[in-house]
Amino acid sequence: MALPVKERALVLVKAYPQPSQKYDETVCCAGITTSGEFLRLYPIRYRHLPASKQFNRWDVIEFEGKRSPDDHRPESRHINEDTICIVQGRAQTDEAQRVRMWAPHVAQSLVALRQENQGSSRSLGIIRPDPGSVKFRARKLSQASADDTALKALFQQVSLIEQAALPALTIEYEFSYKFTCAGVAHDMKIHDWEVQAAYFAYRLRYGAQALDVLQQEYEQHIPTRNLHFVMGTMKAHPRTFIIIGLLRSATAPEDVMRQASLI
Image (cartoon, rainbow, N blue to C red; front, side, top):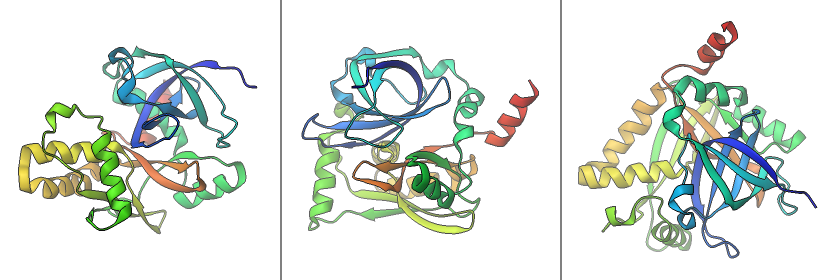
């Protein structure tokens, strides 16, 4: 049996909360260790963590984790929540430092990432959509669909936003991106919690115009900031990649890496 190993990682992603019969709701997180290894951290019962352990994106956290015998994805680590410690807040790392951490993990394309998955079972990676190809879509959830009802119930049950700030909001939409990567067309759902959090915030600020503002932000503004997608597979579908997070930066990753090589 594998022994727990203490590691540190920069948190890149907090994905959609997921229901779990064993752990209540859990949040899948992805990060990069200080040695440059991509990891998936689970099960994180975020709402149950003490305030001192409730980390954010771009925090560096320390934890004890080990490979799980029932998850064969090589990057997955089963985390002991009691050992989570925030060792460096996101304000202590600048954008260039963050980009230097994730830039080496950018694949040539989603097709290339899928091919690597077939060969090595790699289940986490980063891709860059072709400039000008990104189209943001919102699908209104129906009242009749059982899948949509389950999705609504999940979001209503699990919120990473302060509940008191959301007195009357309910889940209305599922969001996705249509894009090309290395010339190949893709259409994928966005499983990053951030997009739902943005819609909630816009509902409070802009009311009926919230969806229009969200569309403008995610289709026009964000793609201009060197948009990259963090891709991950699901345990039940280890060959299928989904968008689990969005990365953007003012400086292109290749420029950051070029500057780093001159130091």
